[in-house]
Length: 105
Image 1: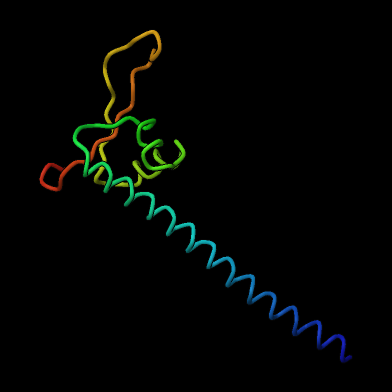
Image 2: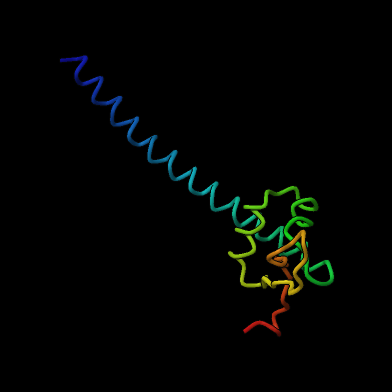
């Protein structure tokens, strides 16, 4: 019976630690997304005009997925499409631009 009680106690402790680990991982995930969003917003605010995701990837050391996720999470960044079509860019270009508070909808 002593082993049974010991295993039950260990199982309860492991269940609590699993929940704590999951909460910590979710908090880290949300913080990382917030950090990337604020990094992108501050960079775009300091530059003039729209920037391409490729330029932002190089300047901020983020992946393309991180740049696009941060841009679409933010209400301060407006995506724009560049209208000209070329051989190397048959679908145009996506540009991201910081929009000041007085110009937001």
